[in-house]
Length: 156
Image 1: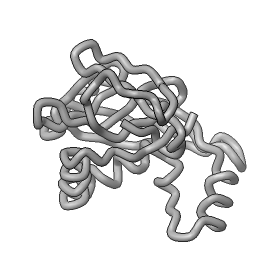
Image 2: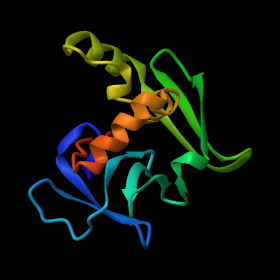
Image 3: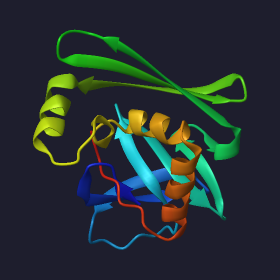
Image 4: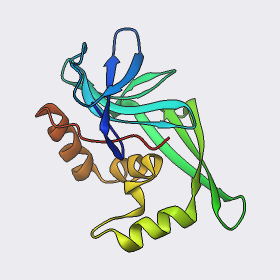
Protein backbone atom coordinates (compact mmCIF):
# COMPACT_ATOMS: atom_id res chain seq x y z
CA UNK A 1 0.00 0.00 0.00
CA UNK A 2 1.57 3.30 -1.07
CA UNK A 3 1.44 6.42 1.06
CA UNK A 4 -0.49 9.53 0.04
CA UNK A 5 1.84 12.05 -1.68
CA UNK A 6 5.18 10.29 -1.11
CA UNK A 7 5.61 7.57 -3.69
CA UNK A 8 9.09 6.79 -2.34
CA UNK A 9 7.55 5.08 0.67
CA UNK A 10 5.00 2.35 1.25
CA UNK A 11 2.99 0.97 4.14
CA UNK A 12 3.22 -2.66 5.10
CA UNK A 13 -0.16 -3.07 6.86
CA UNK A 14 -1.23 -6.15 8.82
CA UNK A 15 -5.02 -6.29 8.98
CA UNK A 16 -5.10 -9.01 11.64
CA UNK A 17 -3.11 -6.95 14.17
CA UNK A 18 -4.10 -3.50 12.80
CA UNK A 19 -0.44 -2.50 12.74
CA UNK A 20 1.70 -0.92 10.05
CA UNK A 21 5.25 0.06 9.30
CA UNK A 22 6.53 2.59 6.82
CA UNK A 23 9.13 1.11 4.50
CA UNK A 24 11.07 2.30 1.44
CA UNK A 25 9.30 1.87 -1.90
CA UNK A 26 11.61 -0.88 -3.16
CA UNK A 27 11.31 -3.13 -0.06
CA UNK A 28 9.22 -6.29 -0.10
CA UNK A 29 5.87 -6.22 1.74
CA UNK A 30 5.14 -8.86 4.39
CA UNK A 31 1.41 -8.17 4.06
CA UNK A 32 -0.93 -8.63 1.12
CA UNK A 33 -3.42 -5.95 2.24
CA UNK A 34 -4.02 -3.39 -0.49
CA UNK A 35 -5.40 0.12 -0.15
CA UNK A 36 -4.83 3.85 0.10
CA UNK A 37 -3.38 5.29 3.29
CA UNK A 38 -2.00 8.35 5.01
CA UNK A 39 -0.65 9.44 8.38
CA UNK A 40 -2.51 12.51 9.70
CA UNK A 41 -1.02 14.12 12.80
CA UNK A 42 0.51 10.78 13.74
CA UNK A 43 -2.74 8.84 13.15
CA UNK A 44 -2.98 6.03 10.58
CA UNK A 45 -5.95 6.28 8.20
CA UNK A 46 -6.70 4.03 5.21
CA UNK A 47 -9.21 2.47 2.85
CA UNK A 48 -8.27 -1.19 2.53
CA UNK A 49 -9.70 -4.38 1.09
CA UNK A 50 -9.38 -7.49 3.25
CA UNK A 51 -10.88 -10.82 2.17
CA UNK A 52 -12.70 -8.92 -0.62
CA UNK A 53 -14.43 -6.64 1.92
CA UNK A 54 -13.59 -2.90 1.83
CA UNK A 55 -12.87 -1.21 5.17
CA UNK A 56 -12.08 2.20 6.55
CA UNK A 57 -9.21 1.69 8.97
CA UNK A 58 -7.60 3.91 11.58
CA UNK A 59 -5.03 2.93 14.17
CA UNK A 60 -8.04 2.34 16.49
CA UNK A 61 -10.87 0.86 14.36
CA UNK A 62 -11.58 -1.28 11.29
CA UNK A 63 -15.09 -0.73 9.90
CA UNK A 64 -16.66 -2.20 6.75
CA UNK A 65 -17.40 0.64 4.34
CA UNK A 66 -21.10 -0.12 4.12
CA UNK A 67 -21.44 0.67 7.87
CA UNK A 68 -19.64 4.00 7.79
CA UNK A 69 -20.53 7.66 7.77
CA UNK A 70 -17.93 10.44 7.63
CA UNK A 71 -18.07 14.11 8.49
CA UNK A 72 -15.28 16.69 8.17
CA UNK A 73 -15.25 19.79 10.36
CA UNK A 74 -12.91 22.69 9.58
CA UNK A 75 -11.78 25.72 11.56
CA UNK A 76 -9.35 28.47 10.57
CA UNK A 77 -6.61 28.78 13.18
CA UNK A 78 -4.98 31.73 11.42
CA UNK A 79 -4.31 32.91 7.85
CA UNK A 80 -2.23 29.85 7.01
CA UNK A 81 -3.41 27.01 9.23
CA UNK A 82 -6.67 25.11 8.86
CA UNK A 83 -7.66 22.66 11.59
CA UNK A 84 -9.59 19.58 10.44
CA UNK A 85 -11.55 16.98 12.37
CA UNK A 86 -12.60 13.82 10.53
CA UNK A 87 -15.49 12.23 12.41
CA UNK A 88 -16.02 8.52 11.75
CA UNK A 89 -19.41 7.04 12.60
CA UNK A 90 -20.80 3.53 12.51
CA UNK A 91 -24.49 4.18 12.12
CA UNK A 92 -25.09 7.16 14.41
CA UNK A 93 -22.33 6.31 16.90
CA UNK A 94 -19.00 8.15 16.71
CA UNK A 95 -16.31 5.45 16.79
CA UNK A 96 -13.22 7.58 16.11
CA UNK A 97 -12.09 11.10 15.24
CA UNK A 98 -8.89 12.07 13.50
CA UNK A 99 -7.72 15.64 14.05
CA UNK A 100 -5.04 17.26 11.92
CA UNK A 101 -3.95 20.61 10.52
CA UNK A 102 -3.28 21.81 7.01
CA UNK A 103 -1.10 24.65 5.78
CA UNK A 104 -3.49 26.45 3.41
CA UNK A 105 -0.74 28.50 1.78
CA UNK A 106 1.32 25.46 0.80
CA UNK A 107 -1.72 23.63 -0.56
CA UNK A 108 -2.86 26.69 -2.51
CA UNK A 109 0.60 27.03 -4.07
CA UNK A 110 0.74 23.31 -4.90
CA UNK A 111 -2.67 23.42 -6.60
CA UNK A 112 -1.79 26.62 -8.50
CA UNK A 113 1.52 25.31 -9.82
CA UNK A 114 0.69 21.63 -10.38
CA UNK A 115 -1.22 20.73 -13.50
CA UNK A 116 -4.52 18.91 -12.84
CA UNK A 117 -4.05 19.09 -9.05
CA UNK A 118 -6.81 19.51 -6.51
CA UNK A 119 -6.76 20.31 -2.78
CA UNK A 120 -7.64 16.67 -1.98
CA UNK A 121 -4.29 15.64 -3.46
CA UNK A 122 -2.74 17.09 -0.28
CA UNK A 123 -5.57 16.48 2.20
CA UNK A 124 -6.38 12.80 2.73
CA UNK A 125 -9.34 13.57 5.02
CA UNK A 126 -10.92 15.71 2.31
CA UNK A 127 -10.17 13.00 -0.26
CA UNK A 128 -12.03 10.44 1.90
CA UNK A 129 -15.03 12.75 2.33
CA UNK A 130 -15.18 13.37 -1.43
CA UNK A 131 -14.91 9.65 -2.19
CA UNK A 132 -17.57 8.66 0.37
CA UNK A 133 -19.98 11.33 -0.89
CA UNK A 134 -19.79 9.95 -4.44
CA UNK A 135 -20.84 6.28 -4.58
CA UNK A 136 -19.59 5.85 -8.17
CA UNK A 137 -16.18 7.23 -7.19
CA UNK A 138 -16.05 5.00 -4.10
CA UNK A 139 -16.80 1.98 -6.29
CA UNK A 140 -13.97 3.01 -8.68
CA UNK A 141 -11.50 3.26 -5.76
CA UNK A 142 -12.51 -0.17 -4.47
CA UNK A 143 -12.11 -1.62 -7.99
CA UNK A 144 -8.65 -0.03 -8.27
CA UNK A 145 -7.63 -1.51 -4.91
CA UNK A 146 -9.02 -4.93 -5.86
CA UNK A 147 -6.98 -4.83 -9.05
CA UNK A 148 -3.81 -4.38 -7.01
CA UNK A 149 -3.22 -0.68 -7.66
CA UNK A 150 -2.83 1.29 -4.47
CA UNK A 151 -0.63 4.27 -5.21
CA UNK A 152 -1.04 6.91 -2.51
CA UNK A 153 1.73 8.67 -0.53
CA UNK A 154 2.60 10.16 2.86
CA UNK A 155 1.64 13.69 3.99
CA UNK A 156 3.19 13.89 7.45
